[in-house]
Image 1 (cartoon, helix red, strand yellow):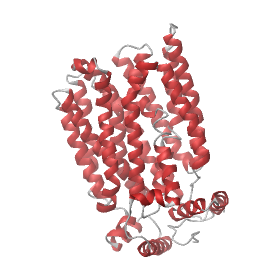
Image 2 (cartoon, one colour):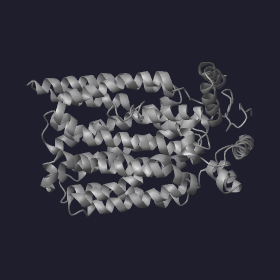
Image 3 (cartoon, rainbow, N blue to C red):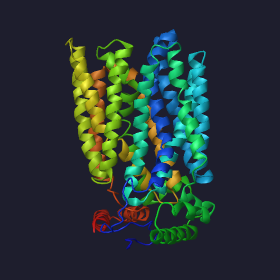
Image 4 (cartoon, rainbow, N blue to C red):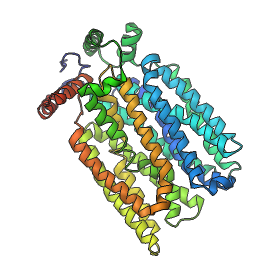
Length: 496
């Protein structure tokens, strides 16, 4: 067997090798991915469940029903918690490891779920939302990192995207749970409290899984790392993998001994990588409206003229199903089409759907009748465009574009930017819609999506099939002003 590598590489099998690694070829790696991805399920469930629960929270608490600000706060307090959790999650991952960070996130999330279920008033509910957000924020940093560090480079995009599938699957599950509890006493309490179940399940399963092999090799035990890697690679590739891990660690030890946040902005190649990663995860994933759609889709359906809570949830279930189905498509495409092309095609569909939503609400506000179905069509088109591309691409790119030394720090910072942006959108959507109208609000999101296309074209390189070390080389070349040739060379190597 031949291995195509550069110094410090994690290794990649030649395209002509008959032992080609595929998504389903190693059940051990797939198992690690699914268990780690339960963190994404928590993220998705919490995102989706609050959209339905909010309808019934408003019924129980008059203060919430009469205040758009309180409704936004109940939704967005989890995002504030996630922002704090993500900010500390990078440090926690680097110091305690990916496994310990996951276990801590599960405990915090489960505790928050119990607090929400028992909340006697909106303010205790808001505190429970904060706790849940802390757990989600830590998990949002940890899960993609854990998966990426255990994944062979050929299928890293698909495996990391599985975490996004778990997010969208969690959103779909939340709508099913919402519908299931519509006729049950204490409707929203069951909706929110049952979220503790997957957190407890992941905690139990994670106890039997290993730490990330790259983190183990760097920080704790090379023998444990070897034991884990031997379940992922055959003996020939394992030897190469270990050689390159050792070389990368030695190079790191000869370099900087500590990570400083200011270096992220001072060192040009790190700054360029962080700008691309944080840009994708903030303005151009969140400000194009994805969590506006997911948090408020039942509310948007009601705005479009469908007044029944149950009908709003049923129609929103279609949106959630399209989100999950689109992510499955993305898992296949991301390692075949590539990250950059997938993001650009996704954004094109997002722009068209946002224009359709804007037109639908402008017509509805002008007195036209039977426009509600046009808005629902716009929601479905939006999700079917967003889910395969701008859903998985930002998380995948952020799991692979940072150097070993800065992966935890930059991953945490980018996730924090993502949650800050998410918080801004969730806290402002209803207020902005009240102030300027829903039609103009969606038109603003469409303009941001156009800007996102320009951003991807200018700042996001293609990383399909590249090892971590090749991606580092790509950024070094970009920092020296030789980006086009370097990227083309690496991609040509990958295809030969």
